Amino acid sequence: MENENQKDLQKDLQKDLQKDLIMEAVREVMGEEKPECPAEAEKEKQAHALELIVVVFLGITALLTAWASWIGSLHGGNQAANFATSNNLSAEGNSMYNEGMQFMIQDMLLYNELMNVLIDMHFAEAHGDFATYERLEWRFEQLETNMTAEFEAAFWASFDAGESPFMDADFVESYVMHALDVLAEAEELFEQGNVYGAHSDSFGLVTVFFTVALFLFGVASTFKKRRNKLIVVGIASGAFLIATIFMMFLPLPTDFSLMQFFGN
Image (cartoon, rainbow, N blue to C red):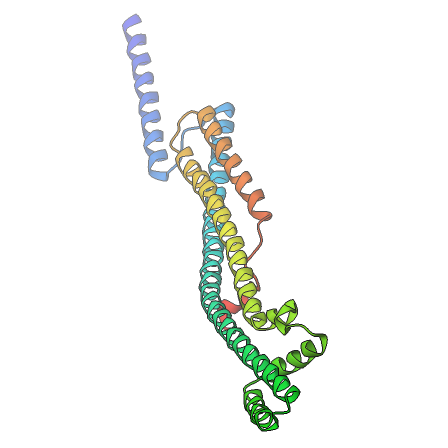
């Protein structure tokens, strides 16, 4: 009788085992998972939420990295354009300055010759040598035709004052005034180019921080332990925050507009 009970018990166990195996096979075929305990389910939910956050930050960081790199390149392009224009204006200004100095030297030589003729005229007049006086007067008139309007006005103004026109600083500066304006513009463009260069370097630094954040967000998912993963995500978030705040205080290129890149 006892043997029969044991046999019946074994048969029941085998049936239960077979049922469990059948149910397990059905769950595998239907894609169902084994029931989990609430604690494990909560951990899995938190892990999934963290992965989702990391993926979102990966996308945002990638976009901001591309943006910072692009704006930095625009600043670099403006820097190159300013430096090129500044160099051209510097060459033009130096040429104009040398030309102005040559004109001034010519006028100085003309002034000396005019004064020599005037002295000889006064000497001939004082000695009653009117023939020489008329010849020198004709010579003076011929020399006078070589005078520019500005030099002629300055000559007679200084003559009445009994001094040389080249003692007047404003008159001397008038020879190179336009050249100095061009050189000043070249210097201004050069300084603005340095500003663009500084902005380009700053955006380059922002790109480095975003790249670091992008790398850390990318490798965070490889860590198994939640604690290690949170540490890496925290460091990446710090780099992301620093780069974002720093970039907010950096200016965009002059006259920047997205519409200009779409043909408008």
